[in-house]
Structure formats: C-alpha cells, structure tokens
Length: 88
Image 1 (cartoon, rainbow, N blue to C red):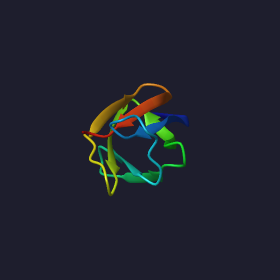
Image 2 (cartoon, rainbow, N blue to C red):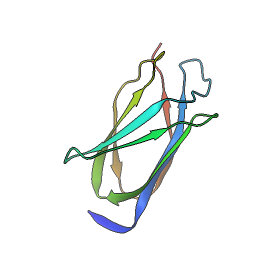
Image 3 (tube, rainbow, N blue to C red):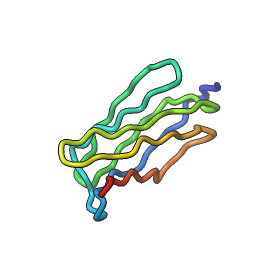
C-alpha cells in the first residue's frame, strides 16, 4: 500500500431508525490485525486518518444498545460519508 500522508475514512454511526449514535466505538482492523478505535461524538461522527491506500479494512461497531453488521472497505482514496447503520 501507499502512505502519502495517508488516506482518511470518516462517516457517521446511526441507529436503525436513523438517529445519530454517540459514544459508540468504531473499530478499524487491517489485514495484519492492527486495530484502531474511534468513539463517536454527539452527531455520530467518527474519523480515522493516516490509512494506507490499496488495503482493505474491517469496520466493526461496538455499542451497548445496538448491533451492527461488520463491513469491509477498500481504501483506494479518502472515504467520507461511510454511514454505519444499526440492525433492527
């Protein structure tokens, strides 16, 4: 992968009914098992910076009240607006 200042991945975490979810932990895991975490703010935003392009990352969300499906993203460039929505 390439790390030119690194790519960023950002978005929001929402409940199944579309409400912003604060204090959810978003975990980003790379193929080598390296993990980073971000905790969502009041309107559900999260952001990771310094990511390598040309790699896949697994996104998981940990929340006390909601369950989320795992999601894999391929970092080709900066990704913004990656919305993670809780399951019913």
